[in-house]
Length: 467
Image (tube, rainbow, N blue to C red):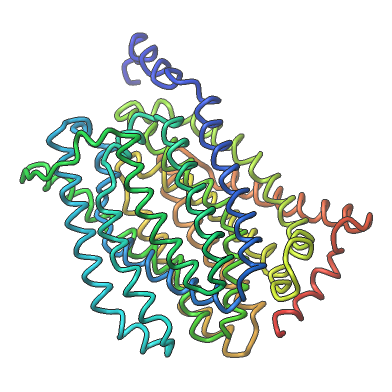
């Protein structure tokens, strides 16, 4: 038998877990983010009244390209600040900010240079001037204050929530105002550019900008890039895994149907985005702070994870049951095909939520590699499955492929999480059965009461996918 763990060491572990009340931290992640999602959803509904689905289809591609450029060049600057012992050092933060600015400048030049080839590839002439206009966004984002990273490192959730909320309010108000005046895709484009400028300026108001100065240290740069090589690989594959469907659908579907799919993805991804945010701003920093004490904390973390996900499972199941009726109420007939799409996507999002928690825990352990492999497996499923499904003209089969891809990603991550003691496959299987049970029971009860479409009526709505 090994020697007993010193009582003082156990006390230190418990103190580290309880130093900040977990309920309050979760509240500052969930409540502000929930309000943000409500505002985003309300904004999208208003914009859908003002703009045609084809405009959302075009912006679906623009946003996928923008996200891709950012992720394909991600070298883990923020993650390095959060996990590094030097993360609070002024010189380290200045080097991190310098790398961020250089990366932003390079991306802006790249997007400007590739605007014409991309527009020609998709045979969308309107895409060329749009890409020219949004190309400076990457440099502007690169100038964000590094204090945003220290907020994440020290779990300054209230300040970060206030920053995100103010940024969102400006973006929504600005975009709606532009759409009311312009009623074209350019309202979305200029709204994106102006909100990026506002967000960058606001970051200095919240962080003081005291570290925003160009500096260089080979030692600090090497540390960031060494950890960032796995982040680069992981995020590159993550982009392929999360954006392939958007870019592929724009190329093979009508812009109108692609726009409807984009609306559905925006709605369904809200829960997934919440899980990813909780993982990035709460789970990842806490696991990283535990360092060598993680093995002792693993049983408690597994129980906390399971209990949290049980609540999320109930919310996801109810969302699957009622989301189709929401679409029929909130959107006009041009967008009603999303009523069939969203419940299917929500089931896929459930696996994405499981994956986000696992990925954040593994990242906190300094293991970014499983995230890369899991996203690679997800991308492989979509790369093979989506062309096969759409070759027969079946959007239903394509949606099933998206769910399968998320499930494969979850299985790969769960295997690694099991090694660390953070999760068990049996826990996730029981939770997944719970999601389906809640969705089916709620759908049957509410459908029989006439509150939402019955399961048969929902299934019949798939005909809307064909216009």
